[in-house]
Length: 591
Ligand code: ATP
Ligand code: MG
Image (cartoon, rainbow, N blue to C red):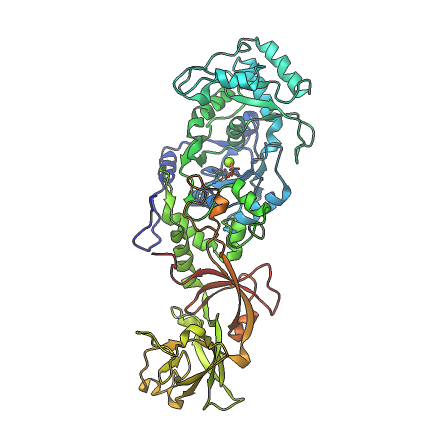
């Protein structure tokens, strides 16, 4: 496993070879004459348009068959980011050419996620939101054109025969017995396919290229199949559907995409991408300049699964609470967890875009979130594992204001008031009756500063029948209040946080940890479900400073000494927020 962790923690973008390609293309004025009619369409439609005001066109083409995950964020920042940087436009295109498994729920969540990351598909009054299924008529026309020009044929071999005759990496394929039918015969057969005269799977339309090509993808790939399935957009209009490898280049060309960026597994498809578009352009159906495909390495991230199939399984088998479970690497989950668009931006800049497959350590993503939240999140006080501290020489019923900075790096955010009284909540781990070496917090006879308050001297504790400490006692030193003259006359080594019991907001907090305990869930012969971390969430009742009661959903804070927490967007109600731990202050997993 290779890690691309940057040793210097700056936001200097890592290399992005696609940026260099675009700079070169623009330098050569490759797209200076490209016309765009304001909407997708064929050559005739586009040539009647104006010179495109968008310098480049990219697209993000999700299939609406699941929720987006962190891998998709890389693709979104790449495609929308390049368009933004180069005065271009990025289309949001729903690649809905597969009639099964697609739904409006997915369309809505995907659109939401893209907007949340800070992008949109508007260009002036033009909305570049498209559905590939709107191109079915053109795709059908393109298929007929290929047939008429001798570049496609209807193959009636069985699926098994086709597989055997495709050959192998070392052996050329064999021509189908149906390969040399006349154009007229192929056209008639293809129309019968369209008209529902043939059973599902009984025949396919194939491009006629070269059964001996060293690239198996060029051995007469299937481009249309018979499939009786209801489509969410086109209903029952079609019983034949285009294959992805045929549909995708056409979608790009109709939308006048200049740079079609996809993941490496499509590299071997690129010759077919070019073959197809050139033939359709020669036939006068598509306008030049044609789109070009570029491949980059997909994001692989340790400790998560980024496969729609596995994510669906986690949700459907209820290993998590839903698509937006804060432990999932879906964007909906990451958002509830408190991950931020700025954090994702930093992450994608830092990992860069390359052609070499690699694994990125999950800690790099967490570091990016920490860095962004460190700057953006105000500080608050929370006691997560509370026990009582009673200041025996402080008057019962009295309270006073203490002042805590909202952000140590941003004094302009000023200070807030917190209340001190004679009974406080402190962390259980901040008291030790018999201190271990190097323990500088509360211990009988020892002194510690109550952060933003007084120095106190511990006088003892009370215990229950099982010997568990229930209450700690102390006395305060009146002249030592933080921020008052002479407050540091008494030197102490320890400093602990606290909230006043009478003023605290008692609140539910979810402490999330990694969903998988293995870096590569399911690697080797293991089932990825066996790698689930059984302790990935702990729900606790904590004591928070009062002001947190007013937190709005999705407000993020640093709880001092603990980490970053966000008010849950789903389960919080006004005046009663609950918090999710986004990330701890330091990496607890580092060995
Ligand atoms: P499937 O497994 O269903 O093919 P997919 O993850 O490829 O799913 P798509 O909806 O086809 O999902 O993806 C939309 C876009 O996101 C594609 O252009 C794809 O290349 C890109 N993408 C998907 N996964 C990653 C990833 N891990 N890293 C970078 N880009 C990705
Ligand atoms: Mg895909």
